[in-house]
Image (tube, rainbow, N blue to C red; front, side, top):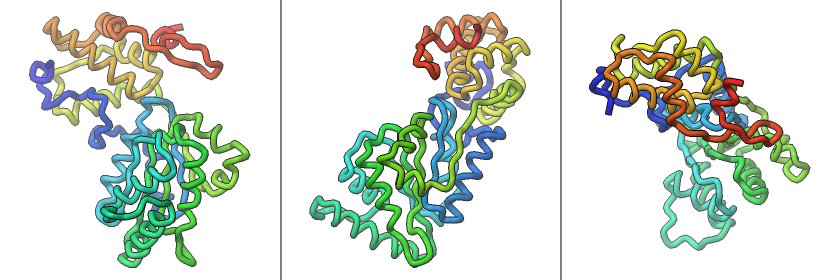
Length: 288
């Protein structure tokens, strides 16, 4: 709605994980480097964790778009699946013909193994990326561990990336999943943006969306956005989107602290659960 008024080609604060909007903070760059290292060195298992809205999915999409045709990839975004559904979805994602195939774990694994061997012979790598992995059942996680057994005498045929919220660490530490946990050699926990990075993050998104200097944020607005968002990109986007709409309705080219306060108020009171399980509005937590 406000894009034309501010000279933008598109909405810079969309909540979808568009790789072109990835801001390379020190933490996001390091997470991406961990992923690239784990894939190129064929480490087998990689785990990336972070809070909701921190940018995990965006990093993964950016990774896959940068790898190009040298890598076959299977992406799973629905983690509420059974072990059989997992295998079926993995094969479908890799483009393995499934018409008329009998539904059994052994048959699915045999087909996958044949595909991976052919893929390896062609000099290509293969990646299985599972988002929201904290929702996977123990049975599915065990099946994923078994997939890591698909290998040659010297190399893993498939690199498995588990992406999830911080509780994924607790799940993997359970005794029942010890064998899987011990196979994970590359791990990274993604931290929020620092105070000084929020300004750069917002300017980066505006630049990608085509803005010059038309839309401005006051220094106080940047500080307030950080306090309310705690450096979580999705929260920053939500505040900036609502603030931009308010500025547009007021025909203002500058987003002030007053506009940011109104934006937060308009967004309502979504709840944030801290480490003790207490649920408080995230904007109130940031202020006090």
